[in-house]
Length: 546
Image (cartoon, rainbow, N blue to C red; front, side):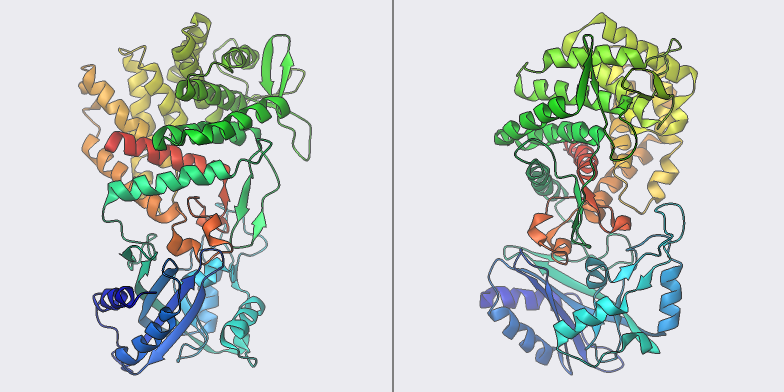
């Protein structure tokens, strides 16, 4: 690394504020370095003055490649606590991986672990009975795993961490560089902690969305099937599959390609569509159905998969102007007919012989299929498709579907307003769908990407309502707050759900995950559907906000 860059890093650290501990006078720095292909090596340096500590940092950086990912942190707040109290706090955490502080097993920080070392190596495990979103995490420290790691990192053999009476819990403030730019890391006690502070929102969004499109495109194998996902902290590839997510990921990837202009990735997308049609569909008479073949249980036909197939085929034709799959889209529509009841409501899951397996599976399916059919109508102008869209929307209005807060319903409402612009009852449905959920959205601390998708659709809808002269419908709604929450949510998602290099560097094969999106509360899981929801939400935000 060049001396000029090292000097800039030193200035960046000094600009953070006081580096010395008020009690001991010592400076403690943590230096994390990754070459992009391997997990970061972490070195804690403690000295009686900042200059002494920085001289050691500078010596270490002198032999580092110029494009290395380097994260330098100052240990800031330190609290001595009993190990028992920390273990009790971990057990009572609602979510796994939400411990956000470092832990040292000695006051000199020879056995210190950064927050992201703890989480990136899965040193904190959930209890066997933990069910995400259902109960407390019952998290615990994996002392055997930690001991092995520290012995390798520090070269120490005699460690008995579990026997420690006290530990030193600490926070840090710091900076990160990729060799080209230096970012200050967020050091607030918030979900955004430890990630770069966003300064130029437009360019940050644009840059990461480009990486996101490339990440999702990389997940398509040569035969057209996706790599379904990973647990990066556990170094595990997910082996199961899901037909809904196969086609919905294609749809989101097409949105992303349309955004980035990387037309060279369209060949992979076409291969993914063809794989899905060949491996995950069946034909009955002249109707096409998506078939789910689970590892356990019998095959089934899901309404949601039918919707996603139609959306993917329509989006492919829109982006490429290639009508290869136009006939298949109409065949899939004829399959939808088999799902609909006389009332306008849809059965959610059929058996392969078209008998009903589950009249209801998940509320998403109805919004998905209505949105998909609205898109299909705009492409084909087939009256039979329009009639089904109208029947479905009439059923949703009559049965108060605004209470479900489903982003797919908002997508369907917006699409339908393109060809039924004076439907005030439909507008009321769309408004309730978001405004009755706004408190929850504003207070939600997880990334939860479908909330941004809901806000994207809602903001667009309020403009449609204004444009059509139906402003009176929003007299009791705080539209200004809606727009503020919309922006906050987009920034929150990028900061808490994206594998930026300063986070990815603590996982195995770091560069593999940059551009991906994750669920922190599930071992930092990154799955194709995680990526599709984040991409769709952020791209729609960017396109409308900028």
